[in-house]
Length: 266
Image (cartoon, rainbow, N blue to C red):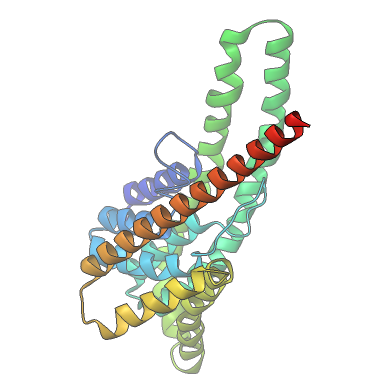
């Protein structure tokens, strides 16, 4: 890996964490996307997308409430794909390495949140002095400059120096230790799916979950037709439920109006 490629990987990680408009938390932060882009940078986009998709399964139920960050999936996807390509790792081994990397990445997130608090006080001073035209400095310029420094430099160094050590490390772990890593990596996607099921396996959604499973396993259809059928079924369900809800509301409103008229007659 060249220095230029390592710096590009650092920039990729920063964009994934930067909260920029239309990019960042809901696009490039996802391991599938940043893994694919990391593959483009390193000349193997297919491999990057494959590893990124495997890592993405772990974070299907990912929720960042408030300022908390249970794991940094942008760093896991970027470096996980990079190490898989440079070290010629299979997806399961790369996944087992990526998850601890994502946990370490939370240090970058909490450092960023801590330093951002100083810029909030600077913004308060601008408001107190009625210098509203300077708010972009405290809200955009300084936070993004600080974010670039704490994201690009560590990620670039980790990508450049880590790539040279990853292959000898895997050769050292060959045998039983590497097999254990592969088993752990194979279990990680199941964990991500299980976490997601906690949110969707509730109430009326259970029926659709089983119907989708049966459709996917026994229909023999490709993914695109399955997606179209699922979308149409969801639209029909929403329309039926919304129309029935509107009817109930109308009946309730009519009954309430009738009660009011009766009270007025008395």
